[in-house]
Amino acid sequence: MSQISLPFEVGHTVEARSFELGFRGAWFRCKIEKILNKGRSLFYDLKYLDFTEEGIHTTKVFQKRHGENEKNHLMVRPLCPRQRHENEVLNEEEGGLVVVDGLWKVGDLVDWWKDDCYWSGTVREVSEEDETVKIELLPKPYGEGGSYDAVFKDLRPSLEWSLEDGWIVPFSKDGEKRQCAKLMKLPSEDQVKGDEETREEGKVRVTKKLVGEEGLVLNIMESESIEAAVMDLEEQVVRIEWIKGMLSLNVPNSETSTWICED
Image 1: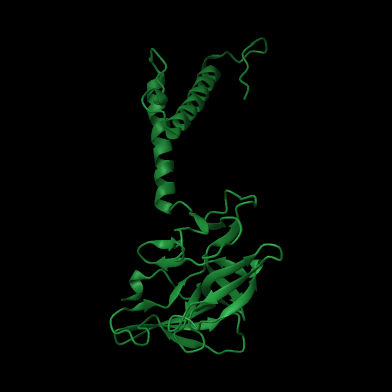
Image 2 (image 1 turned 90 degrees about the vertical axis):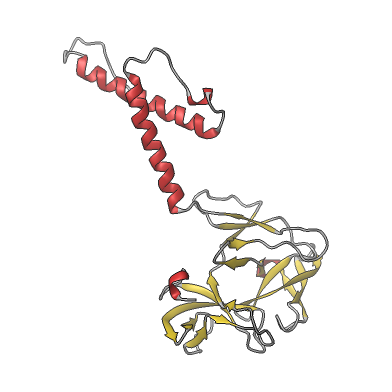
């Protein structure tokens, strides 16, 4: 697969993984220093941000896991969305968040910050009193295996990322199908542009309707959606602005005039 279909560029900060023994199942923060094409393969020169003593690592972007002959795995992904807990005040401008659903529970899929990287695993025990969990890392050959004690503050939800679907929160693999977090996504640039164009078209439409209109026609008469109500409000603003403009044109410029336009 060529770089054209990937969203990464030189200078981007990403997360990268390795299938090397001792580091399986871990994600590292890296900066892309260079993009290379060797034959039909794509490589990134990566600088590990939390291991400053390490030099530049050349990483093959698509790799096969040891023992697998067909499936290629993407070794690089964007930085995980920022994390908040559901009881925290959320800023509407902070789109692209992952909101944690209360306390951690047995079976939750999490990433554990340990030794300057994130290790993926499953929560096996929870102690709410001292805010600790026992986490079991991904089993071999997908991870290094083993059980460890971790504190709440060092955990984040395990997310999956793909070119087709972007970020998703996987279901718990144990017991009930529970998702330990939910995603709050930013609208795409196309969506924002489309909303702005729709509002502008509405303003033009209502301006044309003002002159000679016998009755007040509301969008909510045709649809009870929030979008219709918002459009009605915007149309009333345009009406008021139009009336103020007409008053300013027709009212004589006199000190004795009692006509005043106030916001």
